[in-house]
Amino acid sequence: MFCSHRNQTNFNQSASRLLKRGLIHKQGSTFRLTEKGEEKAFFAHFDAQKFMHKSQKQKWDGYWRMIIFDIPEKKRRLREYLRQCLRVVGFKELQRSVWVTPYKIPKFIEELLWEDKIKYYTRFITIKEIDYDTDLRRKFKIKHT
Image 1 (cartoon, rainbow, N blue to C red):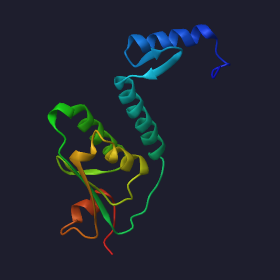
Image 2: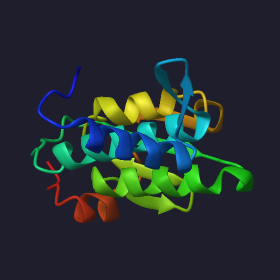
Image 3: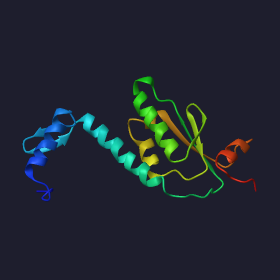
Image 4: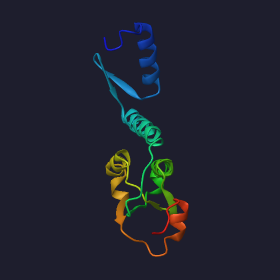
């Protein structure tokens, strides 16, 4: 009923593929996401947000934003995904698990950092000054005032 522009066969084939991949399960006449499906949906949501954020220009407000994380090896996929998100939105790697940007954090990154799977392993810090920030200013093309 929610996809009247498509035929029932397409819907059934799609649902069958999702079931086989373990992304959904059927409860009576209702389909629900599995844990694996929730994870896929979670990452798909943030991928869409990253894409939309790429085109926005920002100005420096004088504050540095830093994200520090120590995500365990067993959650390596999540750690790599976070690094990818940070790169896409313009963060620069200061050290392996320390990333910095002069711009406000996009809402979807804040949401990602508050997600239960990751919030216990990350810290978000806003800083007015960093001693010797010449290299950072150069990376972000910010002139000294």
